[in-house]
Length: 336
Image 1 (cartoon, rainbow, N blue to C red):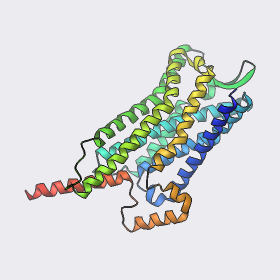
Image 2: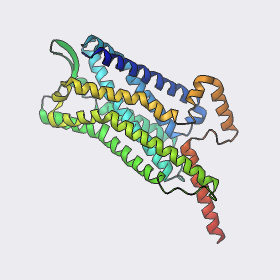
Image 3: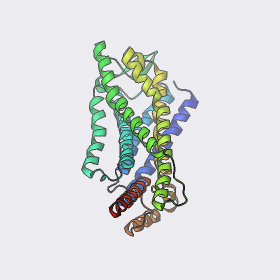
Image 4: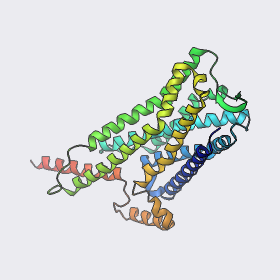
């Protein structure tokens, strides 16, 4: 049974995660005409907020009640569904982080390429849900309510065949965690290499290049926050998955402390995602939306329809700046 302090922390994190992601979903839908239309990054952020909401709304209440009572009271069918949704939605969260990283790297490294087609973006989002759902389907069989020290607990049991249990743990770990994690690290490593180049002096430098440098700094700051937060929050889950491969499922899910730490880490990441992806993004206008409501959305739509650059996201400004620099170079070469 969790202590009163741990239960209180869990409750606070649950409220912060739910409220933060609800705000993200509302703002993105309210601004959909300028943020979601042909903006893959924001479509991925919306998908991330939805997956975090699934965990916060559908799963956290069960965890909070179980933490307060010290045992599982909802029966075996609910146990199987909750565990399955929790693991598959967590996989969707990790994969969506990777999709955002890929899109941002693509925008920086290849600014002249056209944006991802809407159909492809929808397929990528669908895959982020379908893949974890398929991979985690065996959990419906493995998850059971068992009596541990005279307390009922919803936990995963090992597949009876040890080598099959370890093989499944390895496949699930690689497909829903390790592969997306490698993609995140590689993309943001490339982003940092691009954005940490030697800065140009402001005097005598074209405005487009100054804008480019400012956008690069914002992207670099956000990238660093994403990677650091992700590492801190998901390291317990990484350790638990590796231990499961080596020792088998029973050795992990009967170690209640490690499972709690892993769950808390994921919940902290869900609570901080809205801060990372929106508070530092001027175009989301989260706090302005809270203060001013519909007027902010209407102003943004009017600005967008008027052709101003105020509604462009930092990646878009960076893309346009690079296009301008490239055009200037081509014009210079043609005049030689």
